[in-house]
Length: 264
Image 1: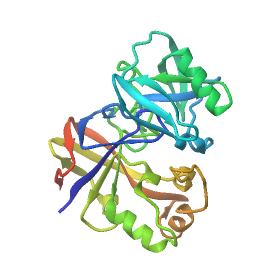
Image 2: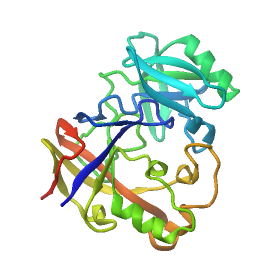
Image 3: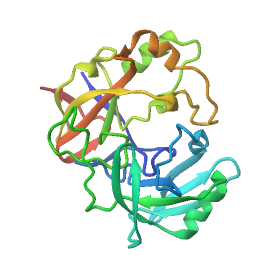
Image 4: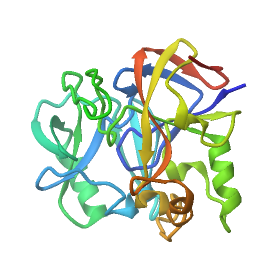
């Protein structure tokens, strides 16, 4: 039996995630997931790939927004659940040029002080339609500021298998999944096609190619060679290390911990 055991959102891309018991799963992704983004002066997106210290900024729900806590010095600020700003900006994420809105100049200053260079906080409005990669999914599914697809799912069995090969086991948060499930065989998500969680219909598109963010300890921002070193020994496909499955949504609805997963 396959059972949903974790639901995670990352409201501001590359910052700490928030674990939920239930939420709405939409076409763009889980509600609030990766709608915010930090960009540099040129509008280029910023992530832990170049700034591992972003892992030290943790998010949680606060009244009418998200609390952003800098665990280095316990300073914090709040960003709204959904920005209503009207100041527009163009931002670049991978090969996409997206319309976004600048949230608040004071928040820009706060994040700039932490990162020690000028940056801006932007939000993806509802009317922006960023399309997923056409190379692997021909339908016009949309995605937030996630790398390429609205959902990432990983089986706990897959992580257990990886950890059995590592000298020092790692937690699931290294891979920043939206959905985690128990049951089944290691890496069985590689072969999924269409599946259902609760009332939500989903489609597996392609395995997820992993980067150096997986080598970043999400509590300390320290890096080492694992797990990429070990994964590259047995999970390399066409020169890329794969772990987890990228997914799109065919029918929206609510998901909750304990939901059964049905494969078709």
